Length: 391
Image (cartoon, rainbow, N blue to C red; front, side, top):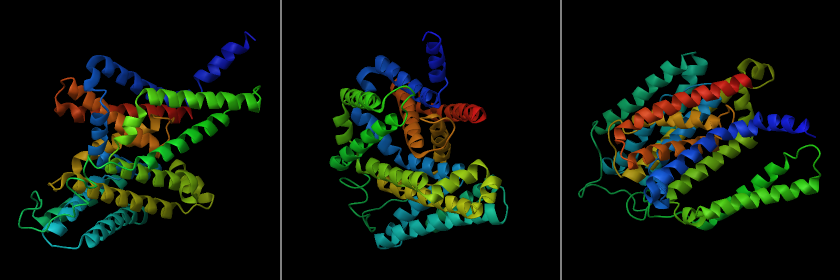
């Protein structure tokens, strides 16, 4: 028994589950340090949810670049597409007086066509993914400047107004407009059941099924108790419509990548294109589709940014490229050991925002934001590379 104990401890220490949790644990310890340092200035539910609300477009861009990264490609055009659809959302109403349904259709078309162009350039013409998407990103920015003059754009007293449900008080873009909490509670109940089943599936040898079921239930209840101790109801009731939309986008994308043939083929394409091709996967089609999904998500980020800001500024989305990639790569070491996935991207991006905001609350100038994002991006890529090599 004494000889088995060190062996079991070693297996636990080297298990993928523990290694995939180390980064999450490190962030939680950091936030605990913020709590001791800043107190209620940092541990404030409304303030932290407001951070997520304001950065929802960046998190969606993180999902956009994540999809192409799964396919083994890079998409540097998402910032330009985000800027373009932000201008389209505002300008086609203010300058062109379009019906808003047509405006949203134009943004969707722009995202799909932009992603399709990227995919064809990379897959069919063989253009380097960095060069192709850097160039198209510049084109998207240029189109927004050509169409709307390259200056800040916002509704005026004499211009057509954005729909009241879209931007302004009590709208999609308002932090004061809350998402229906009953939907969130149902989602959390599903997550609790998923956690229970996940623990059950990891039954160690030597344990009976009934005893491990009890252990799984106890762990699930313990996690729920911790969340309620951290004031879970206040978090649920404080979720804005924007955050709810972000969560729904994440849920849909997760289902597509986790439970569809396309998702499995996409991961196979990124892991080993030649092997996937020999296995019958149409890797070219999978990659092009990934670019289209990325373009559509980037366009959605621009629309949501327009709803939050109620205005469009030149290059408004280009500064989001670094934090978007940081969120995607950070996701490979959040509940993972080198694998890109939806919830890791969203949680990692949120953690990154909170790290930055904690420092700002503590007195660090906001100008350090890009430095922090860059350091986290390099660290995440390094750790992810180590995990991949071990795998």
